[in-house]
Image 1 (cartoon, rainbow, N blue to C red):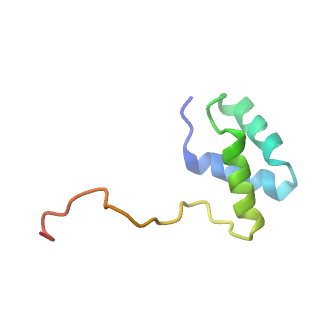
Image 2: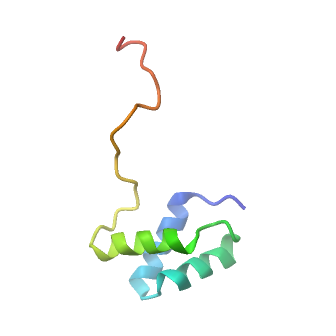
Length: 74
């Protein structure tokens, strides 16, 4: 089952708020949505982010090459 990143991150934030560990959270999410929903390392990454008081569920913007070419800008 394909599950959206936003849904998984929302579940991770909920589990963080109720005091579950990252390992328990990833196990619980995988039981509900399938083994490929989230791995333990990803859950630990998000729990560290939440622990540093960053409760945003969005990825940070990164520098680098743009995804699409804007013909108008050329």
